[in-house]
Length: 277
Image (cartoon, rainbow, N blue to C red; front, side, top):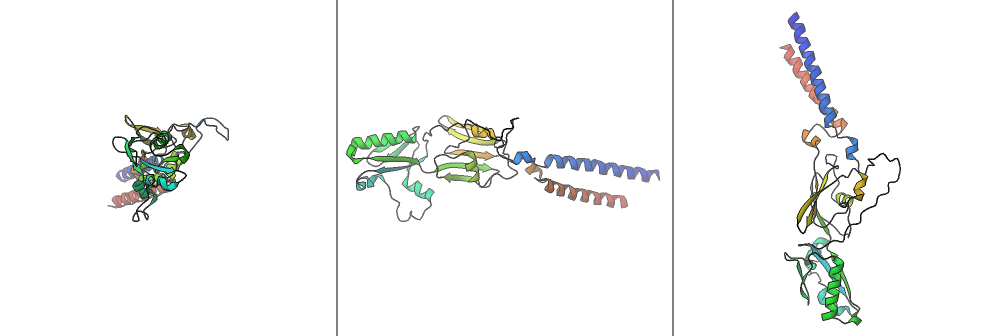
């Protein structure tokens, strides 16, 4: 009789320990609601409106492998046709990105582009406005007169960036805008799922001296005041997965509860079968 009571007490204790363990797993595996929200006000301010001195992005300076879209306009546009490439018939059906590649001017490994009539131009490290002024000055000097009313337009052939990790669409993305902030870039890439770490998103940025890694917290509204709020061409955005994803116990309270109930049912059934032996 004492043996039976001791066995029953031991089984009860095991169930209690198991229950405590499963509850601990449940509390640690759920992703907190605050970790899923963007732009939270994390200080003690009760104001409904937060004024942020948003830092304006510095003018972009051209890098190797950039593709420039350069267009020349004059009073007699026939005189400028050689400067404005037109896609061949087979390329006309291509996407905007593909046409930009074929019609654009790619910056080579030495920082040069090959421009009609002007030959090689070194544009590495120059802003788009500076390149525009450079080409206009050379054309007026060598090709046109002041009366031609020359107009030069220089743009990047789309803002290219790469997304990696826990995000909807990974790979190279292109947005045809001059300025793109981090939220626009993520929204165009399929959004960050619940299992993505919004509190520590990495931006790997190209510089003349090499690459640097910057950390941004998208759950904090002060990210809008960050110098990395606006992405730059050739940025890489990496979203780390949360630990809860690798644990596999569920990302929401409902999923975690279902996992716990399933495990408890399995363990209870196993204990009952053992006790009957």
